[in-house]
Length: 449
Image 1 (cartoon, rainbow, N blue to C red):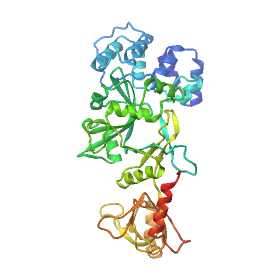
Image 2: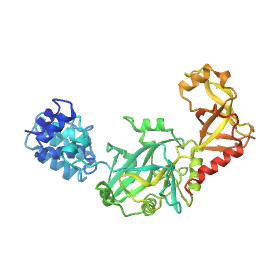
Image 3: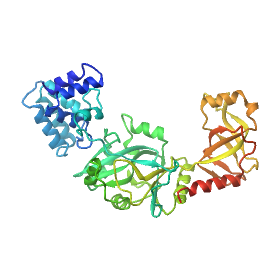
Image 4: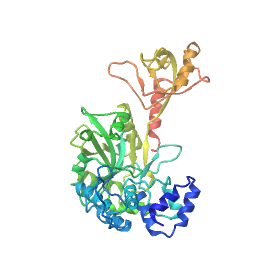
């Protein structure tokens, strides 16, 4: 049975057990295994071309090629980047002209990375163990959470947690390609012009959109990046890691890495050249990074970034190795300070929004009158409930959480940075004082020391 016919058989029913039974029936079909791997394995196979710009309009077909020989071309010429650009598009069109309609359909599905069989990598691997290699992705652990950090603070790295879209760029023989964390392929021609001069390796970072010298907010920027027509002249790549091709492959095969992070980062800065975001030297740069010796120093940078409206920070052990999965040697930092304050008023919602005529935010103050401001972070249901009982709530104590406590130059009082509602405190009649909140902040920043 041909691979095309097996694909049709797989789609006769939609149950996962049925589909795996079909694969088991054809478990000795090496060509089927090859097609499955070349479609869904985005670690071992990337082609640098999609069907989007391939011309398939031909007056007649010259069928003189087998599916197996077409797979050879994809593996040897495309996956190894021997053919790129317009030459690659032409070669795909020429090859499709030499295949039967059924085999050509399989090749098109391989290039779109979807055989349309409604099966994921895990179920395919249950039949063909280890056939599809999972994309490598090193996640961060979470700071705190009741456990002692495994990061050695001395000489550790704290980096801005970019508020954009994760991307991984691979450069091999001067040809860059880009994949998401799930292995989807993307093209960024302006960024590629810089990367094609870089040494072979994997460059890991995040894309944001810069307009008028400022980074657009996450929702707006990511929407543009993921649109059908990304603003390539405004997309910036901030990198934080460089991994050699060999070490990346080792990680995919669960072989422990050997190069500590401080050496990988030094190599990255040597390749890219380090500059801060405000310098904006070009489309590729190194993420803002600071070397610290205590978690308090790391949290201070985190608080500064969060105060500027950014997401937070990543804290890394200088000797962290590259690995697939969650790394205990790098953690997301998010400074959180709880404060008990008193409800002193209600600010109306903005005219023209769904909060018009209702509560928009809650005015608060501490009893020593040294901390004042407005809190948000309520759900619509919470605000609607509060709206219905304003008189009852006036003067009640509530707990807020924030990323810092600061005082503006023109203010005599302090304010909580980005305060968010936690709960009403019917069990408390007194608020925290400025002194108490400052002590809480110092305690939060000293965690892990």
